[in-house]
Length: 92
Image (cartoon, rainbow, N blue to C red; front, side, top):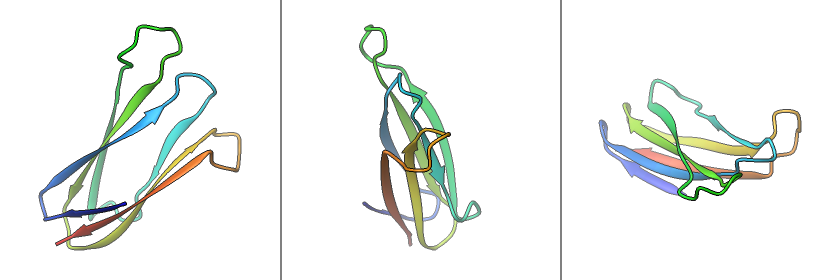
């Protein structure tokens, strides 16, 4: 997925997260000086036990360039990721 921002602009992406199974999203930001990343967990809308939540990821552009942000959905003890999402962030 491609995201285009200007310096100072932000974009929020939402990543679905299961409550069970030990899976978590890991974010890999190759250039912390160019992209500021903040996260928060939004609780599940359902009151059902074990309902999933949403990881809210806010990306703020601070420097011009093109950057690759990886979101990997995995268990900490496993080498193979269940899901990988790539975001090409272009800052103008």
